[in-house]
Amino acid sequence: MNHSFWKLWLKTEHGRACIGRFLLAGIMLLGGSCSRSASSTTAASEPIPDVYVKGSALVSGTDIDVVNKDTFDWQNVELDLNAGITPGPYRCHVDSIKGYSDLMVPASKFTNSSGESFDITRTKPQKFTVHCTTPEGKGSCEGEWD
Image (cartoon, rainbow, N blue to C red; front, side, top):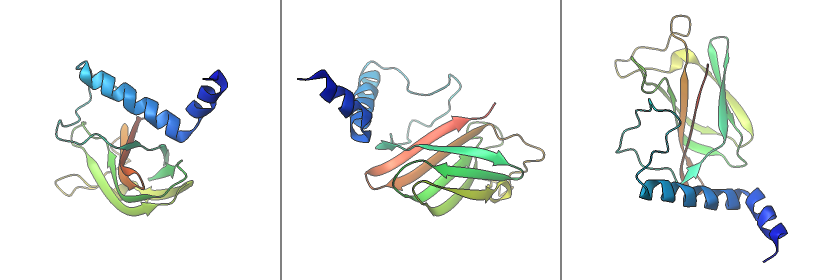
C-alpha cells in the first residue's frame, strides 16, 4: 500500500483514535500504566473512555475557562479540579460545551464532597479533568498547571 495513504490516514481523527486505542490495548496487555504522572490516583473502577477529547482549561482571574477543541459538543460534562490532591476533587457539572467553543466557569462553582466551594484565592488549581458524553461514547481528558 502507498505510504502517502498511511500518512494521510494518520492525520485524520479516526486514524489517530485507532492508533491510540491500539497502543492503549498494548500497554494494558503488558500491565503498564497509561497515567500521565507517577502520582496519579485514578480509581481502578473508573471506566476507560471511548474517546480522548481535546480540551484545555485556563485560569482567568477567579474563573476557569474550559475550552472544547473538538468539532463535536460535549454533553453531560463533569469537570474536576485538583483530583487526587487533598482536599479535592472539586467538581462542577455543566449540561454541555459546544464544539470549538469555551465556557467560563466561576471557580466557586466547583465544590468538594463536603460541599465547600473552591477558593482560588487560597488554593492553587493544579490539575483539571473533563469527563463527558460524546457522539462516540464516553470521553475524557486531563491536564495540569505548573
